[in-house]
Amino acid sequence: MQFMRRLFRRMMREEDGTATIPFVMFVPFFLILVMSSIEMGMLMIRSVLLDRALDLAVRDLRLGIWQPASSGDLKSRICNYAGILADCDNDLLVELRPVSKITWSPLSSGPICVDRSQQVQPLTTFSPGTSNEMMLVRACVKVYPLFPTSGFGFSLTKDATGAYALVAASAFVNEPRPGS
Image (tube, rainbow, N blue to C red; front, side, top):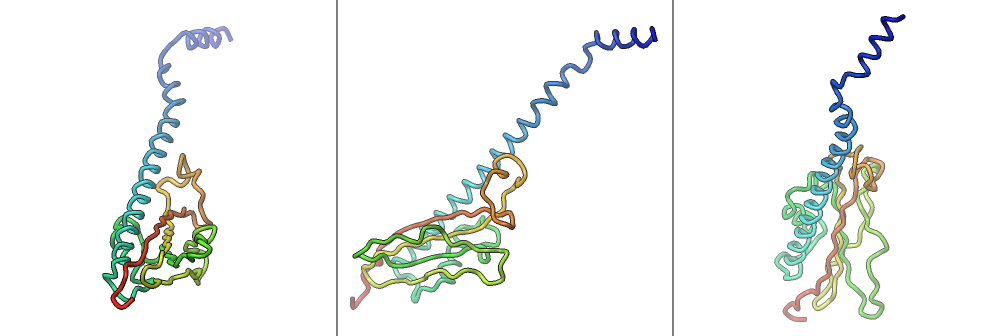
């Protein structure tokens, strides 16, 4: 028994491995900080590229570069301009409708996004409007977080499939067309 006491006292006086304790305590926090920074950076890149893609596609639509405008055409233009959004054609929904000059009613309360758990996707309003008409457009795309179980990726509001929604909106006035 005396031998065990001496061994225990000697081990208590030794300072080998003392740097390991702070390392083990602080590394998880730094890893979560790094992963959250990467996640937030990717979210911002995707959001900015979606906004830019919507603005470029809306410019084409407003100037009447492609006629007649359809939901599929606008969606494919947004996806082509965005570039970084994976599976954009299947994960993007676009709403387009004129604004009443009498009531000035905005778009519905929330964005309509793809529901990956359903076979049939929700319907969105797509009305290209007429000359000199004010239009509102909103695009919603679902994307997966890079680190869904830690840091910022964990705190994002996600759907049942684990994807979060990115939404971009814009307004424009249709250019006057000949004969109007």
